[in-house]
Image (cartoon, rainbow, N blue to C red; front, side, top):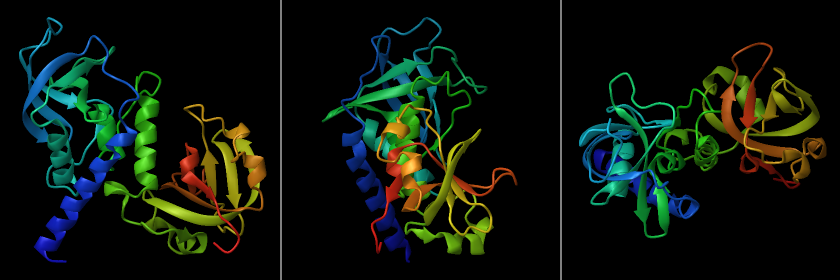
Length: 279
């Protein structure tokens, strides 16, 4: 693909990602403690310089560098770094952003203000941190989920971007048969893939509910975890009802120990599809 073609493809990616704002807005708004600011310079996809416009805590200066909490976009020069920066700038250019501070951490080691940024769009309020995840232009960066106010929102946004194979997660867009994965498993470790397999049995251990793949030479399985109370056991995807079913599961392929084996972690029902006969 020539340079013009690559630029056109990247431009289309950013425009397509903007369409997902509708799924992120109107479900919340900035808290009353958030204060308005204007971005004067976008440094990368998750960092910007701001000018404070309203009343802020006395330890916040009139001019600050803000680092978005809970996410990590590619460093400049890395794949999708320009798209993340452009996305951030397009969403906030010429608008007031509302800065929500963390309840338990103020600054990082570079003295940057750690915050969530909110901006009002045509359909309602958008949490910028979440929007970057949903567009597939950021990774989740949360060390203590129990302390992260928007953890489940962020995890869901990331997961849906992976299901849709957007941005960072678009290397393997088409579903892959399990036999192909196991022919060269190291090729796919830490990649986001959709794997098709039949469920031979289910079981529960410290990892969660496991859906074991029929005929796997390495003990491949999909592990259902429920950190955000999705109610898997009462849903149509109840693990016991999946035995004998052919399914397609999307997630990041992990294989970090012999005990764990190759596995996909499933957090939300959108990651799992029961296939009809012949699919």
